[in-house]
Image 1: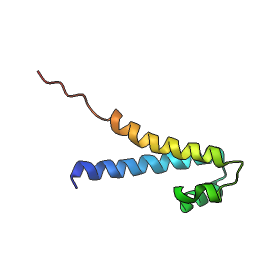
Image 2: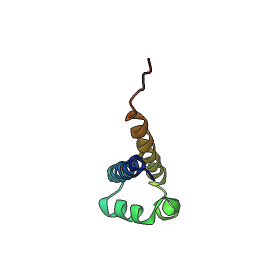
Image 3: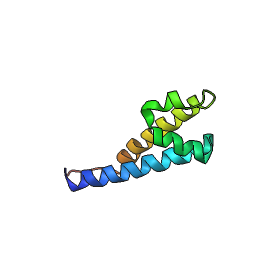
Length: 81
């Protein structure tokens, strides 16, 4: 693994975790957000209350999207002459 890959993984994980927590706190309580994060994405539908399920799914989707958007936003265009 190259150094740039290692850096991107660390930055991507930080962006995901931050986006996920902040988004969940807009939807559920802190205790519920911590529980959802501990359960993980695979079981979130089974363990989240039905009233919050769609909102929590949207938060996960946004957190994942933020990682990829940050990757492409950080690329500098290469101009060859």
